[in-house]
Amino acid sequence: MEDLDFTGKTAIITGGTKGLGRGMATRFLTAGADVVICARRPPEEPVAADGREAVFAAADVRDPEQVAGVVEAAVERTGRVDTLINNAGGAPPADSATVSPRFNEKIVALNLMAPMAFSQAVYPVMQNQDSGGVILNISSVSGIRPNPMGIAYGAAKAGLLNLSETLAVEWGPKIRVLTVTVGLIVTEDAHLYYGDDAGIAAVGETIALGRMGQPDDVADVCLFLASPMARWMSGANIKVHGGGEKPAYLGVSTGEVAAEES
Image (cartoon, rainbow, N blue to C red):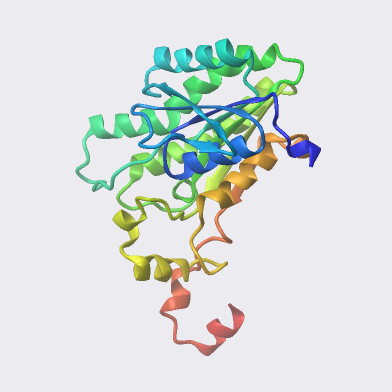
C-alpha cells in the first residue's frame, strides 16, 4: 500500500543492532526507508533486507552529545528524520531492598532520560519538515503492572507514558508522539529469562493469544504507527502484548464459579 511505502523517508532506531530493534530496522528497510541504527557496539552481522542495509552509528544513548551526533549523521546522509523509535533499554534483575542508587540512576538514564534526549535532538529537524515526524517510545508491560526485581526499570517505562502524552500536546500538530507498550518477546536472549523452548512455550500459555511475541509482531505495528494511516493518533499508548498475561488466580483457583466467570 502507498501509505506503507517509506521510500525517501529516514528512520532512526536506537538499539537497532539486535532483538526487537533489529526486527524494527529490518521491517522499515523492507518498506523502503533509509534506516540509521545506533548502539554502543556494531551488530555482529549487518542489519539488511531486500538488498539494502541499515547505517550504523556508534553511540551511548545516555550521552546527549553522542545522541546529537547520531541525529546529525542521519541528517547529513539523507537531509531529514521522519521517524524516531526510542527502543534501546533494558535492565538486569536487582533486589529492590538492596539495589544501589547508582544502579537505579543508570537504569533510569537508559530507559527514560535517553528517549527524552533523543526526542529533543530530533525536534528541530521534524518541526522544520513540511511532513513533520513521528516519535515512538518503546515501553514495556513492566511499566503498567508490578515489576518485582526491577523497580527502576518499571518506573522508567511508566515514565515514558507521560513523556509521550506531554510531547504530543506540546509538539503537535507537526510531530506525533506515541508509546508502544510491548509484552513478552522471544529474542536471542529469551533463554536468559524464560529458559529452554519448553519454558518459553509455558510462558506463552499464560498470554491470552497463547504464545510469546516475535520482533515482527511489534515491528509491523510500529510501521503502521509511523505511517499516514495513523495520522490521527498521538499521545496514545498502544499495547502490543498478545492480550496480556492471564490473572494469576486463574491458575490456582479451584472454584467452579470463578472458572466459569473467567
